[in-house]
Length: 387
Image (cartoon, rainbow, N blue to C red; front, side, top):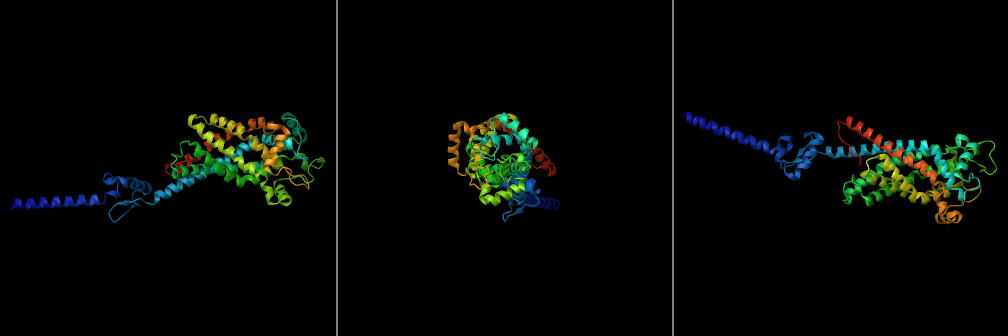
């Protein structure tokens, strides 16, 4: 009788143990303890669910398998949004700072660009040295900062929009066209994405840079009481007055003069960003990569800048714009000075833009790194994919 009782108890314990194992096996996918029993095709989804909600927000299907929690997708979207926001801030600050520092050379470069086809109210110079002396004598320090406000705003908005847009386009095109990882340089993909981001940004900031160019080409003495007769009879007195004058004298089309060469000039930003990415892949130095990228981009696209500056000059009083079409402007420049006409002011451009690009990319990388580190600390160390 005792042996029969012991046998019954043993069978009962075995039955309970088997039931417990079956119970745990059926619910194993819901917890980390059952990770080994998750089918291969479900392991990634379960892992995402556990990361997204610690396993607590997962749901089970009718078969007992775990379904990935939507928090993982929300976290991914949050990371992308945070990445774009940080890139916008970094691009805006770096863009605004670098143009503010080197703006005097930008004024000098713009005035030199239009000398071959300058209009009557635009200051005339024989050389870069002559321009520096005349600007300092006639306009003082103020002349070197003509148009600085729209320059800072335009550059800040432009780079702030272009950098995150460029990164987003690379990421999406890599997925859509199986172009490899967005982190790895791909010449054709990167060039296309950079052109698209540059053209899109240019449509927004073009009017701002037109205002900048108009103010730069106007002598600062034009706003004084003793303005020379050669100057425009209604000189611009500030950004607001410039906007009102363009709208009154030229209409909405006036804000988009020189748009065609400006869109072509998007190739400059495209070449710059792609060259920088390619060089950074083989040269870890930000300064060296940005220097080489800027020299290459400037020399290859500078003629388009000259054409744009000529087309953006303010028309003489009561006259139609003298250079409003792309091809006739190119022809006139060629007649005025041959191939050298398209490179007027290049030395000033390189002196200005090469250190400027080095500063921009250095500021951008530093600011972006600081923002990323701050975000990760605030959000429990969750990494953010920037590139």
